Length: 180
Image (cartoon, rainbow, N blue to C red):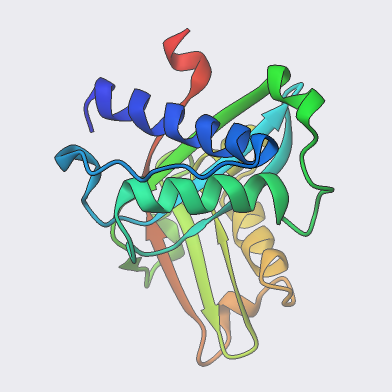
């Protein structure tokens, strides 16, 4: 994805959040470069701490439509956090992760920290961790596998259970501070 497309998506995410406080609608841009369908997550940070993160695992909508929906969801509907307040906008850093296609993973030794995100699909739950998460938390591969199970609300070794499927993916990650 080129630099201008990244800037457009970040601007669109911020405009979406600001529009909520101003009680106005945001128009979804029809720029050709923002029409591809990819999985995408919007993460919000204040003072270096996670403030909200929601996304689509697969590309159900255009990048532009997904950013609008997920920016609002991360700011106001992430159940782990209180809704964003207007006074937090000045300190808000927006990060967008555009995902690659999911790839079935048969050998956990193939997981590379810093490159791979994980998605665990299990008969009793599912969970996803973006590639930047184990880097930020200084996890090794065994810890990453434990944490994906915990994210899914499952026991630590549930990724090994019959019926469990583990997938890896990469992400193109960019944030406001990349362009300031």
